[in-house]
Length: 117
Image (tube, rainbow, N blue to C red):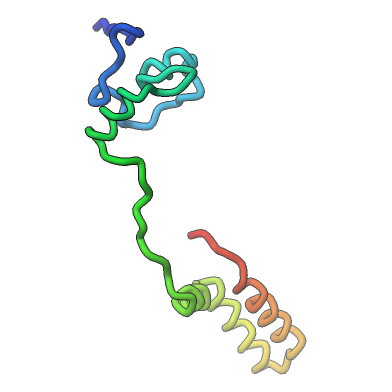
């Protein structure tokens, strides 16, 4: 099976561009630019206009933000936090107030950090 490589005269149309992730770092820069119908100076106005018409504007979709109380609730009901709170309650039940307060301090300090799923 033979394939023709894109050239400046015959760039790859957007519909034929790769949709699956590729190892772009392994491909020569000139080949990447040809696959993306671009150049070292970027895309031209005509290409940008055509792409905007085909796939729409390059905009982020606003999904809204979460209410701070909802974020707090999600952080406090995370599995690890619940395990730590249970350990603190058990420590209090066993009379280990230093351990319980240390665990609760860790939970409290961790609450302010952003966690990624």
